[in-house]
Amino acid sequence: MKLSELGEDAVVRELIRGLPLGENVIVGAGDDCAVLGRKTDAWWRLAKTDAVIAGVHFLPEEKAARIGWKALCRAISDIAAMGGIPEHALITLGVSGDTDLAWLRGLYTGLRKAARRFGVGIVGGETCRSPGATFINIALTGRVERKFCVLRSGGKVDDAIYVTGTLGGSLAGKHLDFIPRLAEARWLVAHHRPNAMMDLSDGLGSDLPRLAAASKCGHELWPLSIPCTPGSTPVNAMNDGEDFELLFTIALTAAAALERAWRKQFPKLPLTRIGHLTRKTPRSRGSSRPTGYDHFKAQ
Amino acid sequence: MKLSELGEDAVVRELIRGLPLGENVIVGAGDDCAVLGRKTDAWWRLAKTDAVIAGVHFLPEEKAARIGWKALCRAISDIAAMGGIPEHALITLGVSGDTDLAWLRGLYTGLRKAARRFGVGIVGGETCRSPGATFINIALTGRVERKFCVLRSGGKVDDAIYVTGTLGGSLAGKHLDFIPRLAEARWLVAHHRPNAMMDLSDGLGSDLPRLAAASKCGHELWPLSIPCTPGSTPVNAMNDGEDFELLFTIALTAAAALERAWRKQFPKLPLTRIGHLTRKTPRSRGSSRPTGYDHFKAQ
Image (tube, rainbow over all chains, first blue to last red; front, side, top):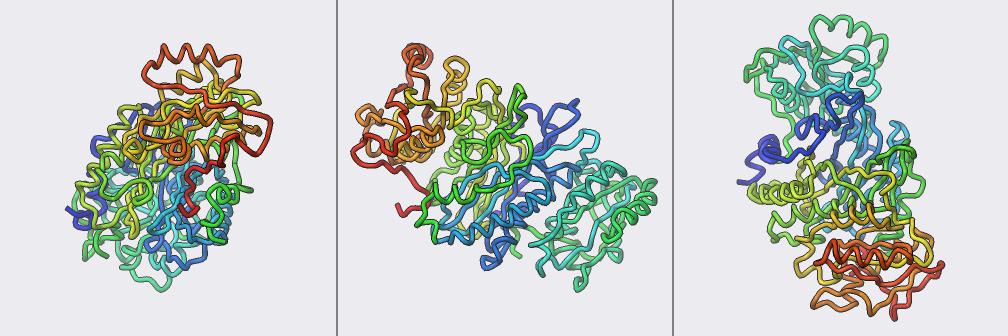
């Protein structure tokens, strides 16, 4: 069976079945990052890999510095989604021998800019000839206090569901120069303890069902409450993907205090309640079943 | 200027200039692995990324399980080259939607087999659609006792130079089912303290000058002493690449004891002295300047 007939989630489920985990693994495949350490450690280590590929995640003619920024910020967004602090990155480049050195320099300008801004060290990597499309793979490590670490799977029935920022229309430009919500996530985990969190990379329509499923809950989404980027419809907000906003859930009793504190702390960034977790049911209330971006389904 | 005109080492030198390193970095880009931790820690962490690409590192029609084995064992070989113990791997796959699920299953069979044999946990990764060539990127972490960690840069003038195994002819099959010299490297660092070490991935002709340069030494290579794989010439041994044997240097005074102990410990694996480090001079004694594999120079 072809991957395009199966779809991304089924492919991933198939691959992670029966993997050897080794020692000192708190969370393996399936969350935004792997979480490594012993149960009783005060700090846990985080690890993430992520690739951007020409023709899929960026157009080959795009400015190289923006591609570098995006490549590293995607992985930083995943570290943020665990409540963590990014530390060290390794860069693997696959490029053709025809690539101009100026392009590579531009790419590294973007990588360095993102690294400096978010306190990441670039400590190595590998550059190899790729006869096919150019790709940039980022491996990023981080750390998080055990008491602050937030998984996708911690959501509870009746939790309020929130998203930061606005969703949809990322292709108009935001996907290349978004700001990973690192400061916001650190503030959240330190002050308001979300139960579950992830970053929105494939669109709310894909990612919210993933968070709910990991938490063994259903979800009720209020379609009219979805904060759309100007020029985007709720359908864009559900499906476009690459928003790199935070999606999290928090106890209903903590919701009002969170909203007040957020407005004071981040007056320019919207925080929107878009629904709540429910007992496990297969459907959201949306009129059509949302799908989001799937890497393998025919688009 | 095109990468193919510059060559791999010049590209890498260009890219790693002025990288932000962040905190707690013992060794950044330029060695087999990044070494992370504080100077006084008893254990340091190791990190490595490495990709294999269809048409460059394997033929698309090759058995998927062998490709998976190779992909993970390449990175394990780099951890071994620091004297370390591999721990956790993250796998990034770039594959076309036309890929058959059976191929992916085969790939993971090879990855799992290598992971189990060498004690590696597979803790996550990412699967994305690649319109170009299939690639598999491995990010691997490890650990090493500070007192055992061996860099490329520790070689000293008059050190004896050794290689394990035999070199050349890897394309005949060994490049797909080699055994990373993890047990040998751990034994070496615990009992005979090499001054410098790396794994041979691009061929002795490329890699020995890299080790010597990192150690700020010259080198004298005895061409007639190079241990060639049956069917290979010294030219193959210098240039074919993908041997994944250990190349290391050790004080001349320790050489005789090492050779005796090695024969007892690893009676089936040759250990061969092939020359020595010298004061910095640009040339080895070889009749033609060896080159090894370069990812970007026209082959």
